Length: 211
Image (cartoon, rainbow, N blue to C red; front, side):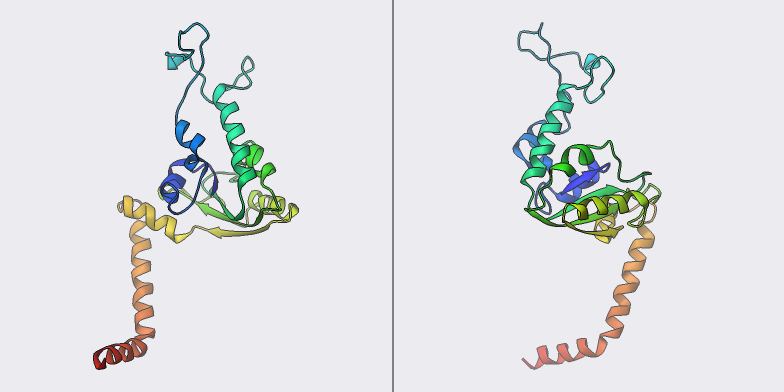
């Protein structure tokens, strides 16, 4: 699974490789995930101790590439080259544009996804429950993303607001805005299904009792 703008959510959703396999689940990604580091030639161990002076991902005119950006660029390219089969991309639907030309996914991963290995991509348009929904599968930026995959010969599908992602967020924090409506809608749908299948359920119960 690739992602853009939804780090904490995709980490919870992928569940350390149990549901999906992200770059953070690779050896290199796991070792340095969510860390800030810098080198310092004057230190005996070569590591900068004062993180206040460490740019992390922050580049400038004096430093166009930091240690972190170089490392994650290489790791992202390698992760993309090794992808195969059916892949997923989780995109933050609370940003405009949702698919951005300056993201790591766009600049490092998308160009290195191999169409001879990857046959289908599913784009998941998600949002944090407290944030507004600003873009969908029919927004210009996502249409552009699908066109880029299709130009590579990769079939591209898109899902708006996958319910399992929302249920995961509500399970962690039921008090979030929208969770009560989501749960009540789900309960109503389950009751409707049970009513429409009541005769079948009755027959199943009779068969179980007879056996």
